[in-house]
Image (cartoon, rainbow, N blue to C red):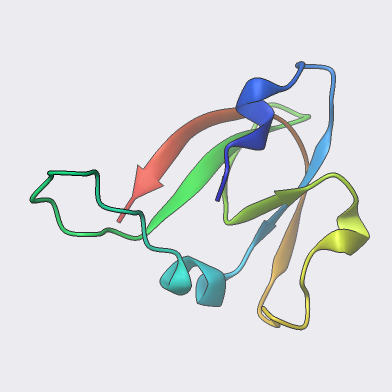
Length: 88
């Protein structure tokens, strides 16, 4: 998952979602020459009311999320800023 908000203006709002299925399918890529194993990861974003939430995807439009592909999704609300990566 790209950290789209980290490269955007802080005034832009995105819609955040979490899916355990998507999280389990989301493996980070190995860095070239690294012996580290691939690890699952998500991203932490800041909501418009200041809470940190664990996110598997952010979308510009709330309806553009792949709800059929990840039927266990939870809509987390609007987010304003990417904070950090969270590895399992």
